[in-house]
Length: 434
Ligand code: NDP
Ligand code: HSE
Image (cartoon, rainbow, N blue to C red; front, top):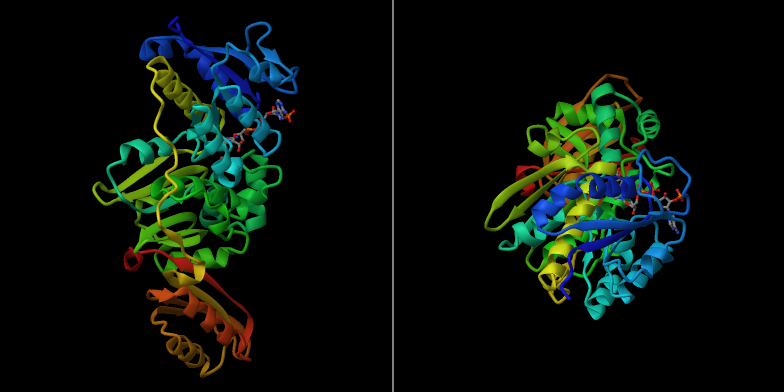
């Protein structure tokens, strides 16, 4: 007999689970009008059934045991919204083996164990939706899989961690030190209790892993993403960047050329007048360049109950539509391409250096001599203040150079007796880097 609607179960009634449940309950009529059939939230499981989540559920809907969702024969789609790797993976695989479709926001799990999860889904003939796993409410997965399906994706530049973007914005606008800006982010509930994933670039790398796999048809390759966080960025670097006409953002970058892919997350100096440089606070933005469409930019809230809930419900509706029309859905990853992921030492970029150099004659020529010997050409120099015989910051911006040459040059410069502290460097994107 034909189904008269689709039933959904949610595991994890926290921030995202609450948002998704609210949308499914409060917008049920709207969804029914748009889809032409009802999507019914049947059950929610969370280990804490007592906590007030600010939402009234029908009696009996909330249970403590996830098995009541996983083993309910009436439930067609399971949304895993507990986060972490275990038992999240077991719930997802359990649902798949019970022939239930799955929706998840769990980028950390997908980036590391997604290849096996998608294989299992394929074997069992079910779909896995993961729109909420990257950039919360911005439908970037759909953009890459569907909207830009006609394009070769040349590059992706993303501000995809709201916490880091908030911290860098505070440091830029108010001159705060990193630690104070982080405390502020924690006070406002943006940063995780343990914010390591946010500030060390790991969360952005999880999300970039997923985007790059879709864009380039490579297996999910979290281990191959270069990761560098924002913990060593100082207000002084931000100020020098500003003087040179740049802002510092934590960027997730994927580029593809000559059968090689670059995957990297690091603080990046971007020209102030680029649209993406103006994305501040907890907002996310993703720039995608396709060979046919050219430049495109997507902006919005990358986290929060309702924005992320919006993405979860979007996946639920897509899968529901496929189920009602007996469609299989688009295969997710095409892991047969011959692209190789580059090591960070193979990339080319422009670079910002901040040397702590003694203020005395001949120092600049020693440093520029080593840069020259390593094929690094200087674009601008700033030296402020006069403290004869003491260390002062000397800032140099380069033209395009090879990272392996940069590393060699820094090793040589840091051995000079006139250097008082290790050299800091930040990669710079701009017209010279494409
Ligand atoms: P929360 O911690 O707010 O919610 C998770 C919920 O799941 C908690 O209520 C938790 O209970 C419950 N839970 C944990 N273990 C179990 C279990 N075994 N059975 C049933 N319930 C369980 O997390 P979020 O909602 O913030 O995040 C959920 C997922 O969404 C994560 O993968 C996250 O990375 C992702 N995400 C989150 C975004 C956000 O804005 N928060 C944005 C984008 C993605 P208890 O608290 O008692 O442990
Ligand atoms: N911790 C993440 C952020 C949440 O700050 O963007 C959304 O994935």
